[in-house]
Length: 189
Image 1: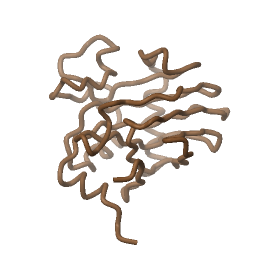
Image 2: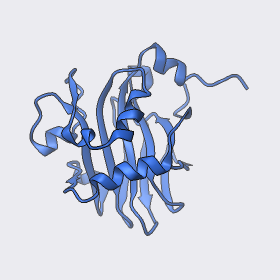
Image 3: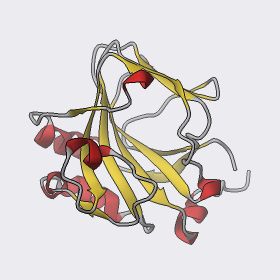
């Protein structure tokens, strides 16, 4: 399996941005792995481990947790709910992740995030700009608003937002089942 794949599913960029606008005024949570970034990288949890109430626990994709639930923030966002319903596989953590202009996510790996190991991280750009430089295994990936990408993040990846606007992705941690396996299978050339 390749380290990246744009899935066939697409979402309405305007509807994504409208739901994002419903949450923009909230206090976003600083990403807790401070050594992995410089600048401002913030998160809002839309699905979190059941029973989690501390903000850090709510944004953490806990590999030992099997039960995730929608947060009250998701109830405000009817289009995000429709997006999540489009995935016929179990969804664990679902978050909005915002990287401010001039901010950097340093090269790192997320050891448990490879479809081959049963867990896939999917990125849906909600707001981006042409000056976002996302690299996986040293190669740049340009992701457009409304697209859905599988990225094998157990490999080295990094992001720099050279632009003047926030980069916001809807990030889904999905359990690989037969439906998702089919989505991750490249069509014959």
